[in-house]
Image (tube, rainbow, N blue to C red; front, side, top):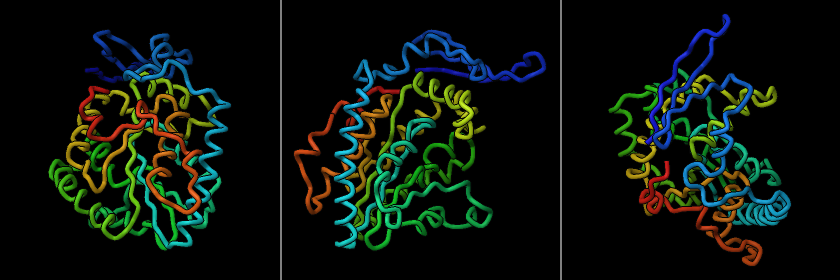
Length: 306
């Protein structure tokens, strides 16, 4: 289990963020403001968390596979519009897990008129006084629509309790209510998916470092991300409770091992396409699930992937 604390020290008049980590029994220090990335992060950025591949998927293979799957997604959307079906997909995971990029790959060639992405800001004062699920319901799919959520009501299972944004009572109430709430969605005919993008700790540190030092990506790095670097174990603990309490037969969690973003994106798209019998589906194109990358929530809970 990794242990960590974070503190700020002055450095020539500037504040310097140092995160003290203990990974695999070794003490580590990580400073996100340092332009150079430590070798121990570089060396384990892909293998962290017992990732099953030693190399990233070849970019040419990825691009060709993604295009084939995106053609199938266009077929799926066309069928949804004809049938009046509804599709809702939740993307969850630690900060920098690759949620936004996965959503982008899924939606890239879909008609935006009936394929929406929802990424809500922090709740307003009015929303804080509402039933917790209320502000999400207004964004649910209608006739023939596909809606993705870049984070969802599961903020109350992870970010909120870790950062102290909700009470223990509110957290427990959520864990009791979420499965019942989701059962109503499925019973009403919504095709409903919950993906957790799982990354190793060194992988996350590498991505945070990239964001912080890239002027085109720095906007992605928030104070919450900075604070969260030192709370890896807290996020793990609440994540595991979330899986135990909200992985259900009607709304199961699917875990995407996402140290390699390319493999992760392909597998989550493939899973959706394999589990909906839409008009014109080409199973030869879809291929088979890579079970090293896509895991059922119940199987993931048996592992010690942190």
